[in-house]
Amino acid sequence: MTMTHGDLLHGIRVNLDQFLHQLLQVLLVGFTIGMMRTVVPALAESEFGVPKNSFMLLTAFVVAFGFVKGTLNFVAGRLSERIGRKKVLLLGWLVAIPIPLLVYFAPSWSWIVAATVLLGINQGLTWSMTQTSKLDITRSDQRGLTIGLNEFSGYVGLALAGIITAYLATTLGARTGLLTFGMTTILLALLLTLLWVKDTLPWAKAEAAKHKAGLVTSAKPRYPTNISAHPTTGEIFTLMTWRDRRMAAICQAGLVEKFVDALIWVFYPVFLYQRGVSLPNIGWIVGVYGFVWGGSQFFTGKLSDHIGRHKPNVLGMWICGTGVAMMLLREGIAWWSLSAAISGFGMALLYPNLSAAVADIAHPNWRGSAIGIYRFWRDLGYGIGAFGLGIAAHFSGSVEAAFWFVSISMLLSGIILWLFGEETHPRINPEPLVASLS
Image 1: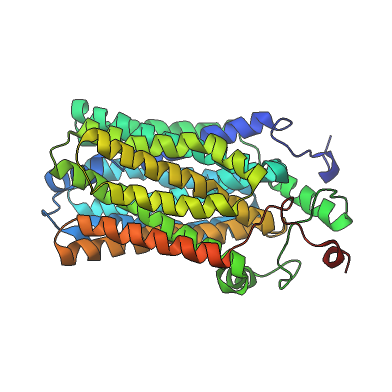
Image 2 (image 1 turned 90 degrees about the horizontal axis):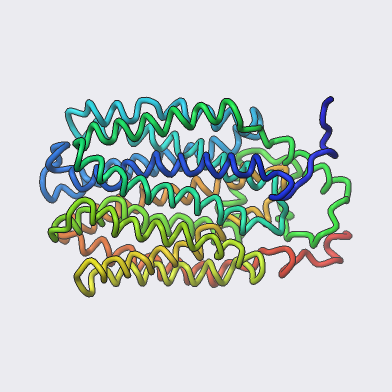
């Protein structure tokens, strides 16, 4: 029997089976990026031939990752509205297969950069789809919780992978450890996608049909009015980037917050390794950031469903930047772990709720594209941020300048978001009744 749009129900509980499958998928997506984050930067000099203090060369792989992932987020959102979410997810996992092999056989750093380009494609396609698919099947009043759980699962996976691969590299060697972990993760994800993941595009179409028929009884979001019912890619892109002040403020905040993640990926391991911290301990310190970020999203996403998105987003930018600056103020594993935890908590406040804010005011007809474009600008922050980090470290001759560059950027970006953004939660700041009837 064929299901119609009217048969498709929205909510976490009624779609729990698929919701859990998508959570497992994003855990494996986190594993895939996490395997490249502790071992590779720390051993760039000894294992992959990067000369000491070659900051621009060291950041090259994250610059490549950011530009590629950002572009693929944009492509993934639009493509998923044409061919479905599952096919895009599957394509993302197929692209990942060569990554562990490139790292294993890498004769030089250029192979690591090539592997990271593929990683950017993988992450852009897979992480975008896990988030979009969950939003398809859940209710509007569950968006903060939905994205919080998604990012919790992904970043706990990232943190776990950094720790596990650090121990595997210590016992098996860097290349063998990464090959074993990487191939196991990617092949398992492919199998699970093929056998159990459903396409959720029909749920998005069902929601759009209800809006069109006037069957939605909850508070109406403040959707942008200067856009057509079925907009072109260019129309959505310009709306997100500058024509809608709220979307533009969210996109710039997303871009700048990735400066923090680029710093933690590239320079935290180098900074700590230069101070004599062992590889497993580096994995744990960086892991504290990931665990706090991931774990806190259990409640920061749900919190925004009650108090709104705007305040957590602005406060998150400032708290996260404060944690970055704290890394330089004292020394010791306990202090560095505390600083990483504060940055992680700040990131937990802003990360799911910037995405939820976009989902609040993006119409179901073009929500997948809007999320893709937001993620394009956000993950472009990896590339722009890593480039800025490299320049700051290069001209100062030390990694410390990169920390100050990121901390100040977060403060200023938070001010822009505070001034130009607004509350997007439809219950707290709904479309005025007069406007909705006109």
